[in-house]
Amino acid sequence: MAARVDGQDARTPWHRMRIWGTAHAVDDFFQGLVPAAIPYFVLERHFSYVEASGLALATTLGSALPQIPIGILADRRRLPWMAPVGMSLAGIGAGLSGLAPQYPLVFALLLLAGFGIAMFHPPSGRDARYESGGSATAMSYFAAGGSVGFFIGPALATPALDGLGIGATALFIPPPILMGFILWRHNNRRAHVHKRTVRHEGIDHPRMFATLTTAEVVRSLISNGINTFVSLYWIRHLGASSLLGGTALTLELAGGVVGTLLGGRIADRFGSVRTVQLGNAALLPALWALLACDDKYGALPLILIVGLVTNIPFAVLVKLGQDYLPSRPGTAAGVTLGLAISAGGLFMPLLGLVAEHHGPQGVFVVLAIVPVIAIALCSTLKEPTTLHTEGGGTATTPS
Image (cartoon, rainbow, N blue to C red; front, side, top):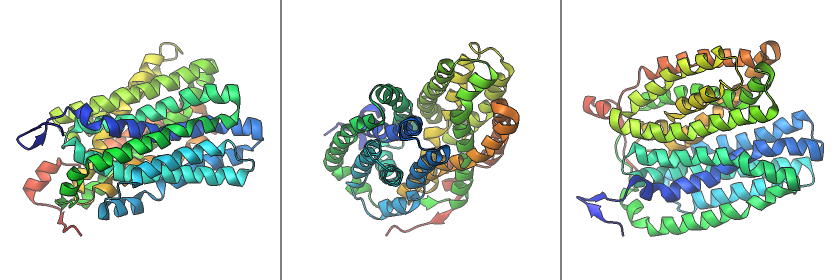
């Protein structure tokens, strides 16, 4: 058992979170694999663009809609098998999709993969919070795992699919099953911690949580919009090659990983709310600086900075959501890690219409204005410690 000092876990934040961070990376790898695989379904299976967008929708629906009921269930029952099984289902569904002969079966398998992703986030967010010991830095390692997984998904999948065809998705089935077994063993070893903390006590602040969730949906719109149109911005507006466009996307995602880790350290020093407000405010100059640069090479470090500042609040939003709903950490994690992040994808058709009429540059102009909404929303947030001192909120009695 790890050494403890004055009743506190003496392990470093990384040592506490390395299993959870790695598991999060493996799980969210498949959120990056699916968009990388969709073009190959079009090329090899001759799916239409409408059918291709339906495959992306299947994963989004499967991962977004069940988050709240799964979160409620995770708050009522510990269910140590749920996160490992969810991770395994994500791998099996996405992995087998490339072998499925007909569109309806591919759709169903990707829906299953999305459901597996949804099963992972609420219980893992709950248990990762327990083991973080209240450290935003520790939670940033957990959150950064998801960013890393999303980042390496296309990086690993694209060469495999390019060389072996769409059936190469099956190569990625074993890792989540193995990691699921490791996580299940870890949960059993740490059962003594979760038994002591299974009763969630504290004062809920639902209005603050609702404001935070709304702000996160706005931020999700920005993040999804950048991820979707950054390559096209380089190709169509800056006149770059498709390879350089892919490089811009890679740099943006890499900046997101760094920003996630940096945000946790900033929050531990200056507070969670200030960190969220800083991330929102920094988006404005970062995006406008990118728009002001017309050089396809000179803009590369700017997109790295955009990715970094976009993700500074990511881990902090997860922790802050659980601080606002201390009696329901699983539900809070389901909303902040799953539902709110996926909700931004619902606005992509609107940004697509903007792109049709004004090109990718028009999309980035819109995205450069949207942070004002997030700034206004987050200006009303308060630190949870301040709320507890003021005595606001709704007291809850755990079932």
